[in-house]
Image (cartoon, rainbow, N blue to C red; front, top):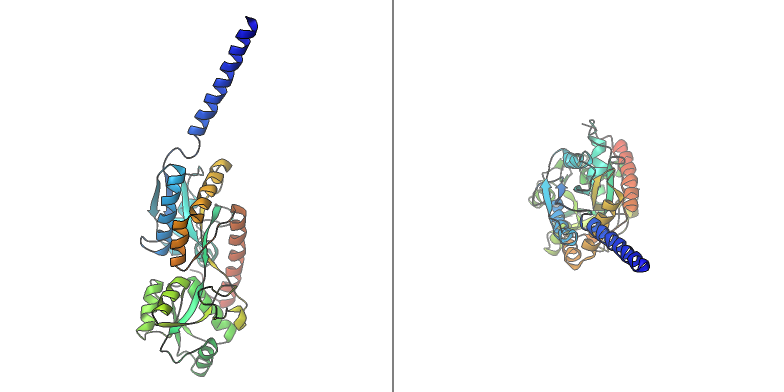
Length: 325
């Protein structure tokens, strides 16, 4: 009888442990909607990617992911809202290279520390920028562009998607390395700068691979160089800056981040969900159609990339003498 009672007690204890573990699993992260901050306006590239990722991750996490656009200060306002949010995993943000590695160098008032206040979750994609001219331009190569710039100082111009953008800095790096003065003209976006170039307002443009590829296929532009460390799979015959003697090369990228201090279990859940989303066919196909290569990473790998790019952009900005505002 005593043995029977002991067995019942043991069985009851096991049941309690199972119920407790089940309840804990059911109340584990996440148990409510997650906010995904986009440091750019609705309809742009970061917004499109954020909504793609949110849709896939919300299914995986079984919780809604609400996208919130917060614009201003070249993306720094939105990223700062993530950095300063409660570190519980329920506020995350999509970020791009410039917002963490470039723009912080150009703003005198520091809104956050990109190396200390942000917890990387993982990469989403990588791509690069391209230097292009109209297809009917007399400029047929990078060497031709530089030769014309030297023969007519201050006469040529290039456009980018804004003052202090990666395209702007890349152009100034090119100017300094080649010893020329091709005037920078900022526009509200890459598409606007390309339209201005095709309309004859400027001579060249720095823009993303996806935009350049679309215009190449339409027979409207010619790509002279790419800013990535390796040649672009979209333009395999086009040289990199490094091949042209300019010691500078960075890939553009998108990633997901959270405030520093989020509990490890929540970070691990977010990383796993992001990895599954990016490796899924829907996001992979859409990224490729936008001129990006799907790429995942560990949080540590993304942190190393942020640190390296932050140091590289800081040095190049200092070398070009671009003013901090």
